[in-house]
Image 1: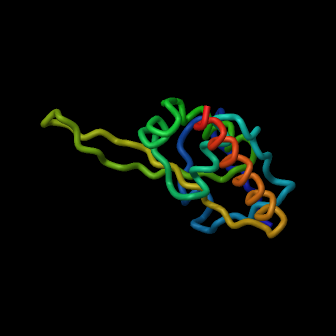
Image 2 (image 1 turned 180 degrees about the horizontal axis):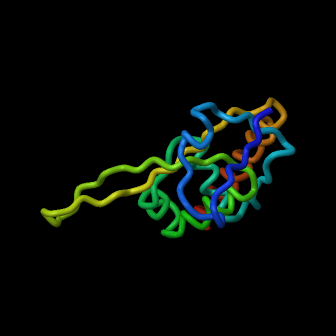
Length: 133
């Protein structure tokens, strides 16, 4: 089994696929901690399970622009999330902005996959109840 955590200097810095040798790590129940269903970390993980995620997409769905904090929490708790730098046009002629997109970069053992499926159902139910209020 490949260890899921990447050593970062003082827990800072970007994590890319090259940190994992371009080989998806295998995550199991012993490697990761699932977040509380009613948290922003849970929303971020749920969205990452569907596809990649940017700060702007997260802000539009959750009204929170603090995605980096939640990504850091997920990484600290064993989730292998990598950064992709995207060039974004700005209104200013002389510069381009860089936007970060995050991707959950892993394979999952069957037991963890089953837990994640139940987790996704729980988060979706919570979000639907919250939307109904």
